[in-house]
Length: 157
Image (cartoon, rainbow, N blue to C red; front, side):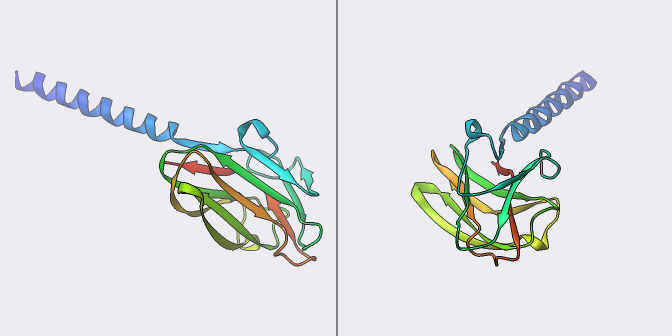
């Protein structure tokens, strides 16, 4: 009888662990650049590359205040969410300012020198996401001799 009870408890704990892992995985959302249906849009001039980026492609342009190129990734969220951006190894040599919008239209601005990163996720922070949460970025902070890149973002809660 003790063995049967232990087996039931073990099975229950194992099931809960698996379900917890599945739910954690399901709570991660990616917004792919170039895919309007996933929540991405852009304006201004951008070059694209099909040989570098999280999914094998990314967009880039030279740093400058003119023309200004912008990109935004948006996702309807609910609750505490980790906001992250992917910086690929190519076309990322400038400093940018990411704008993070979260709960009730609040915004935080974060300066990131993309040159310091290569093929990695950069966590911009954890915020309370709501029906309109997003990350935006433009090229207007970077020097004209540098390049900035727009790639995927990740929302994880």
